[in-house]
Image (tube, rainbow, N blue to C red; front, top):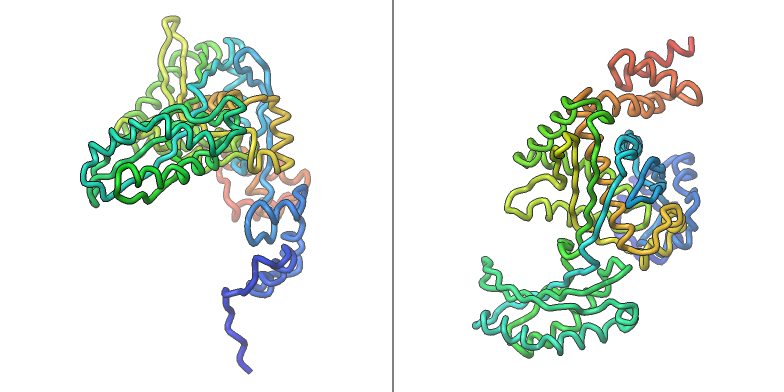
Length: 424
C-alpha cells in the first residue's frame, strides 16, 4: 500500500493550538520524541503570548542574553543587556568600554524622534504643479494626520511637517509626499502608516492621478543617534595600535566590500540590544545600511581620527527607530526586564545607548584586526561552542576548548578526537 503524499496545504492550521500544530509538523517532518519535547518547551515565554505575537506558532527560539559591563554613557554607569548567539560580541563591548572608561566613556546625542511616511502618487500629468498643490494644504494635512492619533498628540507628538519630492522612474514621474511625524517614545510604524493611509484619498482629490504605496520609510534620517568617545594611546597599547585602527577605518571608508563587514561588526552590538529590548532589528538594520550609502557609495557608519593630544577619537551616527511602547517592548516579559536593567525612561535615551554600543563594538573589532587579528579572541570563545558540538559537557567544555586553542585548530572533527583523549 502506497504512503499518502505529504502536503503543506493545511486547512485551518492557524486555528489550531501551538501543540496541535507542533504534532502536525512532527508527523510531517519525522521529528523524534526528543525534538518534539524540546520544541514544546517554550521556556519563560507563555505559550498563549507566543501564539499571539506571530502566526502559526509551534515553539520559541531562546537566544542567550548577556550583559555588557563597564559602560559609562553621558556620565552614568549602566549595564546593557544584549541578546545574541555570536561568540565574543558581549565581551567586545565590555573590553572597549573598559578602555575608554577612565577618559569619560561615551557622550551621546539624538537629532529627534521624527519618522517619515511616504505616499506615492503616479499618473499625474503636471507633477510640478501637483507638488505645490500638496504643499499648499499643509494645515489640512496636519489636521488629518493628528486626528489619526490623538493620544500621540496629547503626549507632545504628531505631525510636524510635509515634504514633496518628484522622482523620475522607469514608469514616469512619481510625486512622493513625506509626512514628518514626531512619534515620541514609540517606534512609530503603525502611527505613521495610519496617517499615510488616511491622507492618500485626499491627495488623489487634490492632484488627480492614483496613489499606490502608503508606508513609512526605514531610512529614518530625522531620527539619528550619535555617540563619541576617546581612547588614550596608553589605554589601547600605543600609537601603533591607534594608527592601525585608523588605517582599518580608512579601508572601510574607501571600499564597500570592506565596509559591509565593518558595518556588520557595528550591527553585532546594535542588533543585540535592539533584540533584547523587543525592538525591530530588521528596521534598524535597514535604516543603518541605507544611511551608510547616503553619499552615493556604501561606506562606514563610524569615523575615527587622531585628537590634538594624539589619542584615538571615534564617532558614530545612524538612524535609530526604536521605542519603549507598543509591540514586544511592552508584551514580551524578557524585553520588559531588559529595559528595567537599562533603566531608560525614553526612546531617546535608549537610542543613544544603542549607538554607544555600536561604537564600542566597532572599536574592539578594529583593534583586533589591527593587532592580533580577529580570529584569536573570537576563536577562543568559539572553541567552547565547538567543544559542545563535539559532545563535551560540564568541565570538559573549558578543558577541550583550551586544547583546541592551543592546537590552533578549532574544528569539530579535531574536537571529537581530543575529547576522546580527555576521556581516556
